[in-house]
Structure formats: C-alpha cells, structure tokens
Image 1 (cartoon, rainbow over the protein chains, first blue to last red):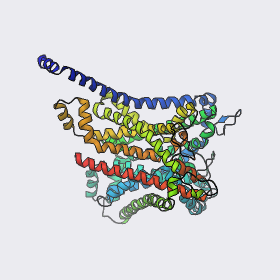
Image 2 (cartoon, rainbow over the protein chains, first blue to last red):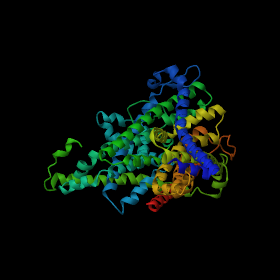
Image 3 (cartoon, each protein chain N blue to C red):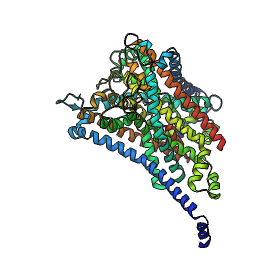
Image 4 (cartoon, chains in turn green, blue):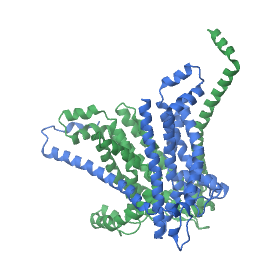
Length: 342
Length: 292
C-alpha cells in the first residue's frame, strides 16, 4: 500500500512539496485571522476594564448605585444610576410599545402568504438598514413636535389621572423627555424584532396550525393554540435582541432625551442614557484621567448588560427551534447581520 | 406546550369566538399599519426634505461662516466618510473573508465554535462601545482624534459582519464542487480560491456590501474617534468629518439653514445605505437561485 504514495511523492517532488507548504500556510493564515476575532474581543474587554479600573477602584459598588456625576477636579464623584435608570426606562418603553406591534406584524406576515407578504417582508428587512442618525433627525424635527403637541398632553390628561400608573404621565408635554426617546427606539427596533419573530413563527410546523383549523378552530385560536406556545421563547428572544439594540442606541436617543441625569417617576421628564451620556461628555473627558475612566466604566456596564441579553436571546431562539425540531437558530441569528442602528 | 391549550370548546363559530377572531384580525392589521406608517414616513420625509438641500454648493463647498450658512456645503464630510469607511473596508474585508473561509472550509470542533460565538458576541456589541474602545486604545494613546481611529472603530463592527456573512455564503457552495476540484488534484487552498470563492462570488460581495452599509451610517463610534472638523482633511492622523457626524451636529444647532443641510446629508446617507442594502438583497437572492 505504501508504494503508490512513494511514487506519487517522487513523481513531482518540488512542486508537490511547495504546494503542500502553501496549503498549510493558507490554512494557518485563515486560522490566525479567525483567532484574531477572539483576540479583538479580548483586547476590547481588557482595554475597557483596565481603563475603567480606576473608577471601580475608587468607588467600588457605589459606582452603580451613586446618583451624582461630578467631574470637577478635586470633587470627583461618579455614580451611574441615573444613566442605568434612563437606559432601562427608555428601552422599557421601546419594548412595551414596539414588541406587540412587531409580533403582530410578524404574525400577519406569516398568515398572509404570497403577493403582499413577500414584498412587505423585504421592505421591513430593508428598513432595518436606515442609519440611526436619520431616525434621530426625524425624531427631533417630526416625532417630537407631534408627541409634544398632541400625544403627550392627551396621555397627561387621561392616564395621568389614573392612580399608580398616573405617576408615569405627570409633568409638562414640552421639551425633551424619556417618553419620546422610548417611542423612537420602539420604531427603530421594529424591523429587527419583526424579522426575528417572523423567522421563529415560520419554523412552527404548518401541520399544527392546519390541524387546529381542521378541528374547527378560528384563525385566532389556531395562532393561540398551535403557534404561540411554540414560538413563545423565540419571540422573547427576539424581544431581547430588540432590547439590546435599544440599550446600545446612542445618536437618536441623545437628540431627543435631553441628556439630563435624573431619576424620577415621570416619563415626561428629560433623562440620560448610558450611551447618550458617553457621547455627550467624551470630549471633556479625553484628557482627564478619572473622568475618562468613569466613562469607560459606563461602557463596561453597557457591555455586560448587552452580552447577557445577547446570550439569553440566542438561547431562547434556539429553544424554539429545538422545540419544533428545526435548525432555524442559525438562520435566525444571521438576521443580526443586517445593518442596525448605532 | 402549556396547559392552556386544552380548554377551548370548539362549538359553532359565533358569538364570543367570532368576535375574538375578528378582533385578532383587526389587531394584526393595526400592528401592520402602526409599524409601517412611521417607517415609510421617515423614508419619504427625508427624501422630500433632503432633496431641496442638494445643490452644487452642498457637494463642493465646506461649511460657510455664520453670516450665510446656507451657502456652505459638506464636501469635507463626503471626503471624510470616504476616508474613514475606506480605511475600515480595506482592513475589515480581507480579515472578515479569511475568518469566513476558516469557519466554512476548515473550521470544525471547539476552535471554530469559539470563533463563531465570539463573532456573534462582537456583532451584538453596541456601536458606542466599539467607539469607546478605540477612543481609549488609539485616541488617548496617540493624543488626538483621527480618521485612522474612526476607521479602526468601524473595523470592530465590520469584521464580524463580513466573517459571519461570508461563512454563510461559502457554506452554500455545493460540496461536490470542492470534491471535484480536489479529485482533479488541486490543492485545498487552490480549490478554495479558484473554485469555491468564485462560485460564492456574488454572495461574498453581498457580505461586503452589508458591512459597508452598516459602516456608512454609523455615527456614535466615529464621533468618539474621528470627532469631525470644518475643512477638507486627507491626513489619516488628523480629526476628520463624516456625513452622519455632520448631520448629528447640524441637527443640534438652532440655525434653520443648517437643519436643511442636515436633511440633505440624511438623504444622501439614506440613499447610499438603501442602495447597498437593496442591491445586496437582489444579489443574494439571485445567487441562491443560481446555486440551488
């Protein structure tokens, strides 16, 4: 058996050997570049945490629960709570408004097959590519005036009077506020949440729905009984993906949120989010050690939240496809490739 | 899966059941309208507002003084965006495609899944974090904001996109083609470069286009790294303007004439990004048909 190999090797010695070296070199290069991605992530985490270390060292856990932010030399005090609060509230509003609409649209896109659904699907996917600064410009000059002049006064006059949740809707309608930021975030996450929900709903076997319909279920019942139970975890995953996007969104939010560190019940008041605050104060911080370190600590906080959400999202989307025995998870996550807001 | 499934009595479809069903249909269509109206509105509003701002000056002049702001243009932003996105593309595309080749052609076992996982993690990194990273790593170290730093912050975003997208398209290439090439005596690398990659060709281009579309519209990372300026700059070590940055800056000024220029910039961005996104989609649909 060894003879033919020997002959082959002897037949074209130099060329084969050179080709084998190139082959190994090529494989090695791609491997090294692939590992480069891991190195990039590691470098990013190391750079951010070492940069943030001074802050964590000086303030410890107080950084996460402190409410004052003072970069004045000698009186430095850095607390991230107002920004964590602002980020959670605006993203929360975005999810509450955006997710039901996105899921509704996704269900519709799955129900109506053919001539309308396909162009609509493509349309929604493509809208995901609109840059966030374009959303921001529109939010500032179109959405905000509309919310200020009609929607917010209406909410203050109606929901503002309801006990408990009324506290969310007190204050004046004018000016930048958390609510406006939440609404533009809701609009911005619609395409991605719709796209991923549509994918997880699409992997629910049609037989199940058809069986429900055959048993006499209405369309609503077939969705509730045969689609949602399977798609639920995937839809939650899609929402988390949306939440991650909303938390990381910088530009559109900073144009309408007011960039005022504040904690309070009302959504009608200005606030600041982690990204909007980084974007608005990095200039002064570039040459000031502790201030710079505090901003990097904010970035670390954001990274932790975003990674946890992304991991949960992937897990949940995967669970849907395990549930129905498909392998949709990888197709679904590639949705994340589509340009997103930043 | 839940127990709620068991409790529906399937009598004739009337009364409350019919009402619920109708309500549901109405709800779905309401959602569609609520979702599509603002999104369509944004696209058309930007077009109508932006078109008026497009003029010779807009594309060829730098910003004018405060006395006649409407005379100015944003040529420095176009050149800056070209420079920054150019740097990012030149670095990220080869890195991304090589990583994609590793994942699709060689990658098996733990190393490959680790790389893939990391690519997804990077993909979900908020773009401002990429900006803050390069700000701390490059801007603070070199002591100034620069086009180079801007490009590098975009590399962080583009590399995983190109890697994941190109892995996906390379995997679409039928296994028989690889086997055929290897059977003819081609070494592995040649089979990949000469047979697999040309077959995936348009798909790889799609991956690049998606990444460039993403990079073009990014504002936050550029803001933290390239900062922006008012004159044409081609030195990659100096602060550099970019279209999204300029739109953001002008949106925040109280000057009406600058708002109009901001809409013009937004329109150019929107058209460029949508053009890339739509052509990428057309190419990839065609590609899938061709291979399948």
